[in-house]
Image 1 (cartoon, helix red, strand yellow):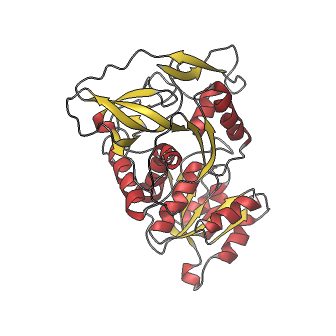
Image 2 (image 1 turned 90 degrees about the vertical axis):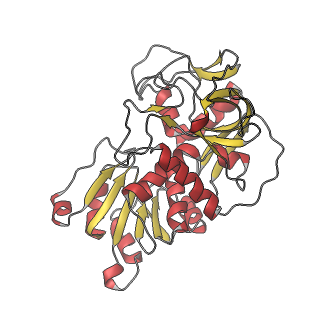
Amino acid sequence: MKAIGIRQIPGKPGQVYYPLEYITLPPPAPKSSELVVKILAAGLNHRDHFIREHLYPGIAFSVPLLTDGVGVVVSAGKPNSQWVGKRVVLAPGRGWETSPDGPETLPYAILGGTKHAPQGTLGEVIVVPESEVEEAPAHLSLDEAAGLPLCGLTAYRAVFTKGNVKAGDNVLITGIGGGVALAALSFCVAVGANVWVTSGSPEKLEAAKKLGARGGVSYKKAGWEKELKAMLPLPAERSWLDVVIDGAGDDICARTVPILRAGGKIVSYGMTLAPKTPFTMSAVFKNVEIRGTTLGSRKEFREMVELVRKHRLGVVVSKVVEGLTIEACEEVFEIMKKGKQFGKLIVRIADEERETVPSKL
């Protein structure tokens, strides 16, 4: 079976960029508790770019890339399985079942490009335990469903498990345009929170408003936090942020603590601008918490898919390329490398004739 992984070449982490190569997998042979899923579409995440730069642990050179995927169950190890014929989305990790604190098993094994979970979605088929799939929400298009798993799970845990966001809360989401930030925006709006965003692109700020954000500011402007403070609603007791959902790091604490309420939370799911964020004494005085988060449990994945189904939420798709080819994959990797995307980058591997119901974002 055909798939795409990476080929090892000499180079230091952060300087090397491993080329893509075709790999061949053995024919699927599912055990009694496993399903054979024909992959219809797969989605990129930043971890895939980091893997090619050797900036991710446990890299493997014979394992298909990509974590996100949607497919159709074509066969099962168990006779007359209820899953055969269903369109499913794949849980992105293994070893984290229900704990709200973190994985019960370490290392937490994430699909795509590593030795910890030697499977990925950038291929024709994948064999997975039947406990690791959810039926794809019927209203999602093929491309939307492909972009949901990892970003949706990361955003769900950041917003609800760590951020405790609820109706009426004032939330700042930084770096709008990436998959996690956009999913977090969608989830917050769905439960009635007030959302503001940051971006370096005026076009992305305007696009976020169309998706439900109350407003946004450019992080390229000096003192952008003061501009944001002026946007927050009156009366004075509500002109503060309750939660910051951040993927940038750097000086986010120093900038946002003055406009966070006492006991407010900064939830960090990444640090793209700097590998650390100083925790200031002013944060201590205001009892502000910084909470780290990454991905989520199998339980949270199930809850996230159900939230998307209940509220008929969509997934923002930036670009779709056709075919399981290196040329098509390089096109979307290049977009990610330059940070030009607004939404998910999708590789369409196979087509499925299926009508879908329009979704809302």
